[in-house]
Length: 515
Image (cartoon, rainbow, N blue to C red; front, side):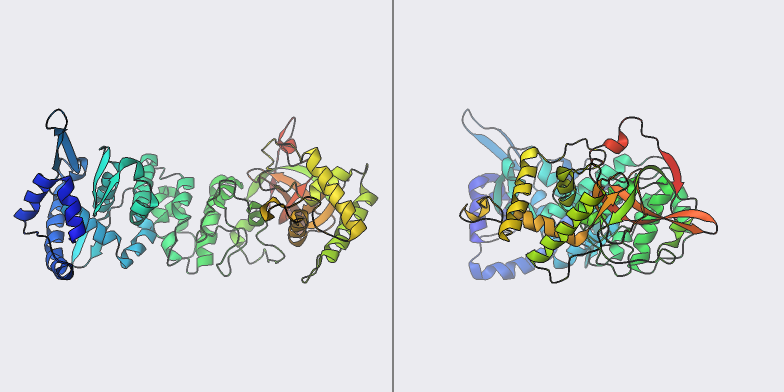
């Protein structure tokens, strides 16, 4: 205990605290004596704390008591009393959660299992995980207006969630809350809902990929655990995540659960199919998740062989409900070169415009620009969201900018950039259009509607709405063993179909087999 900490303790609880410390041999030390004294007392503190934790199994739990209580001492003063064992417990917990090795404990999937209470070994001590979680949670949740001792700092209740005071305990609190929510969701013979299992895995900064997989099947229903034995033992991360994705499909027979689970921009796992769930990639913190178009278009310009990647899904048993939207009439031939310039982009979009003018009936310039910009917010314009298209003033601004670009060969916006102090013209329109041109290909449907889709698409592909997938899907018909099969090419944006039209009115769903 440093002289500064001693002074804080003495001022806030002079009588009871001073007596308690002196009874146990504590004294105010000089700065040079602090480290020696700490090493001498640490073993005794931990032994005392572990004895307390061992007694928590029965009767009243220690963490149900407040750290400090107060009663009126007179009309104007109050008498404060400390729970005498808490100081030792808090020192023990603080030392444990600040050890470098302890960070790995939080990456283990068993930390989230509601019925598991593993023993954590911190040589020479061992204790149950729940004891540590409950103790830290109790320190945070006790009901006094002024938090007592936070390891030398007096913290009032309103400051509890301040990252400066609670950074070391954030993971501990998160795991405690996660275990509680999972425990409440367990149903007899049903296990934990798979959506909660996915949430428990994602977003964890694991040191090893297998840490994410550890314990997943312990949360699943017994029939799922038996079913998992039919698969070969997964050895690689790609096999692990592909198997998990396969289970999602087998449970729902559509894309709903996969859509809820997949929220990652790109996979860092070698050999992982673009549609499998990469649990090692954390969820984005933004509620809107502005990269969702990249997520759904995760395969980009790469190709894959459906005969060897995820063969389990090539069973005719896998069916989905679908609504046919249209067929692809023609696609733009030109693509943006790797080392592109603004002039390359201008010529490319000019080709798109000429293709659309040739095939559209009638020609709708606003529809063309809505498609080219994919409404700028394609990631929020799901089929199930009934939100209108770009506003008229936004479209007019785009058209004016395009006309000026062709006249002056200057691709800068017509308006000033407020983020640059409104002193120069920005390049907002150019950046957005270039991003869409890099990631997608322009096409026109049989009805003459403009759209943007995967670079792998071609004329004759079919556009569908699939149950559980919140974007239109491009499927390619093919014959296999005299049976018509549909292969997923990618996802796309089609004007007038991105605002709930596919799911409104008398839409008729039909059942179809993929792969």
